[in-house]
Image 1: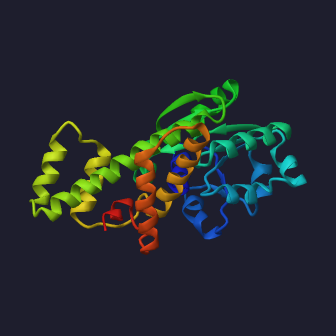
Image 2: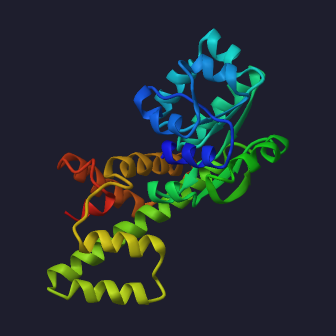
Image 3: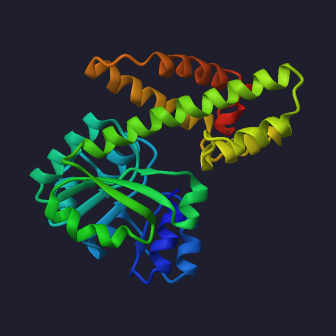
Length: 272
């Protein structure tokens, strides 16, 4: 996700300095004219606004050197925009640490897959200080089709979890309906055409159904990633005392799929 997002930023004409733990992944951006920083410290020295797209909280802490003197020196006078998905509690604590160091923190989790990232069609959910949001929001426009200000941190991540809850249960329901049709020996192409023509059709259902019919397991949202997000939502639901019966069933299904070795495949392969 981070690479196509950064490529859209660079194509918009923005000056871009990039860093990746795997340096070779910066090559496509360097070819577009981006500068490649040799280290995280060099990147922070070169830019006052830093966009972070990392998979886990542990990876974020490691890259930022959180909890060390380097973290405070690094964040002072900088704005960090987190586009990844973490727990709201983690994000809130990170925001407090960055503020204590004299920096600013913005949440900008995104809704969409790698396909939408490549097309600049992601939807961003924003949270943070209003003045800082007003300053950085225009810089994000080349990556996003639309953006929504959700309030203070961690409102954007809570919104992202709500969106993901709907996505997970919706696609899992589609997979179950597909399996029902398949076992009943129905014409799967006709099933696809009926759903695509009806009022329940969406860009997600149309695309995921196409993958199911063609048995295309190439990952856009992998089963491992879906399970990770499922856990984040479930943990937040428990913390807030919110019942999540559909999500809990999905958690069991995706955990079983991972145990069967299907983790790297697209979430529609939970049908197996």
